[in-house]
Length: 251
Image (cartoon, rainbow, N blue to C red; front, side, top):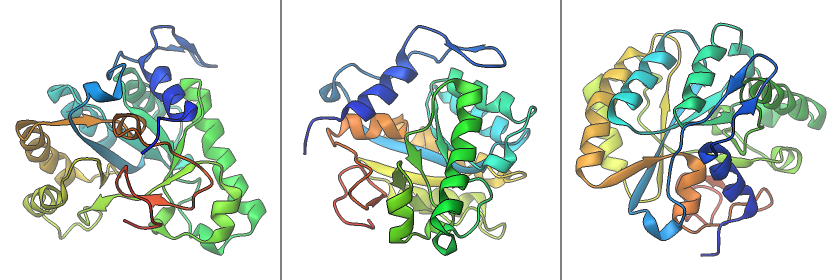
């Protein structure tokens, strides 16, 4: 393992800094989070959420995170960002959560041209920057479908994660909880969805979070996860991370 990169350190400091970030709309200040040194962390897991933002389920997920005093990372679809849904993006950032890119349209980007790939990323990056004042560090490919063209044209770190098929309505809250806990390990990235109406994941979080805390995990953002594990992230290594210390494309 190597020391944390400037890119990761910067993202953590942006989430922890006391100075407000000025946006076009208003001033958004992030909450103090995390530890100054990697060795101050114990076991860590990153809860991540796809397909927002929206005015219902995103807020319900934030309610649960706030209830237990934990943080997550939200991977946004650019076309879902509007004046109303952006309020939950601001709220998440103020709570110390991290905001990341999940494309503009949630299409299969491995079937796109280089120009279209860049446009998908740039659109959502710009929307996020308008809201919180900084561009994201991380990108989750729609459907976790990737190719070399995407790696060559997206200057963000690719994130996958351990999922529980919570985008399927037939998967109950109890099953989501059980599948998530079975995959939980130090350094893991958990892939969940805050898509509109996905209340069963909100219910599952009410079981997942207290159990992870009871097992001694600290629930952190993706930037914190890599920082805590002393891993230098890169946009040049063609890895789609499901855990911080991963060294091959898929974990």
